[in-house]
Image (tube, rainbow, N blue to C red; front, side, top):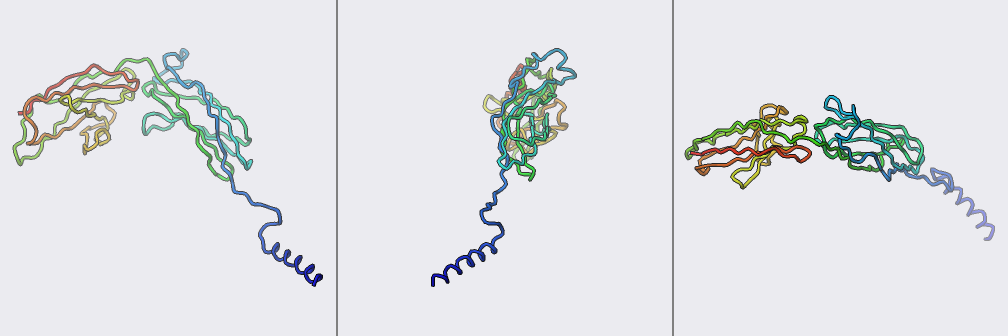
Length: 272
């Protein structure tokens, strides 16, 4: 019996080993994505007025952002790091989009050349992430770059608005009443954050320079704006038989990206 077991056990082990895909003692590991940490950059805040002479030309500010980050890839197959600087204005392309080959773990540093329109001050987002040779993307690290300027406030140059309107009778269709504000800014139209109107001291609505979109005011099917980006900010109101007769007071103001406000302009529509 003793000899029988001495022969059987080794045979069993051989069968088990030959049935496996890997050799004894070898453990397959999953691919691990690279990890970024300790993001820093300088400067973290820029006042365009304080940049060296010649840094601002043709309405564009140019300066260098020194970025550093720690990177670690457990698999040792680190491939590259991506650096983006994203505008605070929706729909804009990144002002920087760098792809740098990095193959070793450790501390990584790079200088990024930025060109930012002076009319587009605000909080920019600095984003970094890494990938390995298998194409796996790691975590994202982000920070905020504040770009500011000492500037003049926007100005409301004119308001196209009717003085008097006759209210439709019962059963008659509602009237469309377009209101257009002509607005300018010393730094350019892109520096205008919003144009607002307070109606009868009760509600505040936005005037839109969006070419007829409905992004400014929820519930409004169309701003009535004709051409996007031309400095003519439009709000189209509907007047029907249920509207109250009498004076309606509209107070307009424009606000730029630095928070500076224009002087207010007051207009009155008399509903008859």
